[in-house]
Image (cartoon, rainbow, N blue to C red):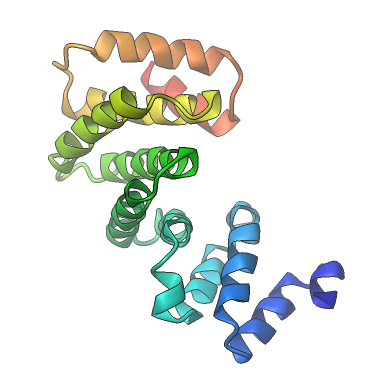
Length: 193
């Protein structure tokens, strides 16, 4: 705790790994995952997660989600598997937290799949899954709606340009992009609108 108060997150993680305090390492990882990724330290995040016992590592879909994000550019096949694992884990949960995670995992999954121009076929399954999840759960927040909408629209353009709802998804993506959500979402959406 003292190391964390001093801002020594890496040292704290190292002590937790040496002491094999996997639940505490899991909590530390989840608290700092987004920050690590924004600092370009995805491999550090992956190392922390891989150090955990399988019982701890495999019980929280957020860990798979963050590993998938860390592997997005360097190992897209692994990222795909981790996003799928994360999605299944979130769908097994109930409540708004599970829905939020499922939506984020789906968006990440579609995003990683559109970067494989050799085989866009897997997008068909996930476009249908996204439409089903949206219809059954609704949006957990406007930010989640913006994130998933732009990913779904991008997937439809590349894989299902004949989709009967493509125009509506494009209009919704454009409207959400103009509402000023996450700049990364706006930039990516702007490429396709």
